Image (tube, rainbow, N blue to C red):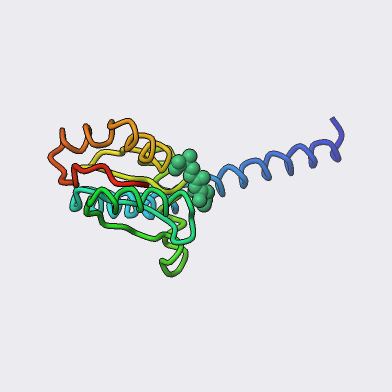
Length: 148
Ligand SMILES: N[C@@H](CCC(=O)N[C@@H](CS)C(=O)NCC(=O)O)C(=O)O
């Protein structure tokens, strides 16, 4: 092997090592932040019987919140798009990567368990599955069927 080839091989090996190191450092520096966000999500869903991650302009979120409102279900909501410093987007990413595996909003939790999004909520309301679920968890709602 001539010197030119040796040099190229060495340069490629160095580049590969530097890329691996950068990747490891990137993953390591993101980890504590992810853990902090997972803790904050766990706190949200543990401390509130009904918790909704939403975006203020999202029609699916509006439909889901409207359904809960008309059922008289009391919930706490975090509008991710209204949070400062991009924190809402980080929460959405953390939900997808570490908590529910779902990338869209709304994400609705009942008694510390992920229920689902808007479609499931609206369909569940019409089928009675949602009322059955809330009853089984002891979450209060208005029994009378509202016109949605
Ligand atoms: N099938 C989902 C649809 C929800 C959906 O598509 N939400 C949009 C916002 S309206 C979303 O999250 N898009 C991705 C994003 O905003 O990052 C549901 O019923 O919840």
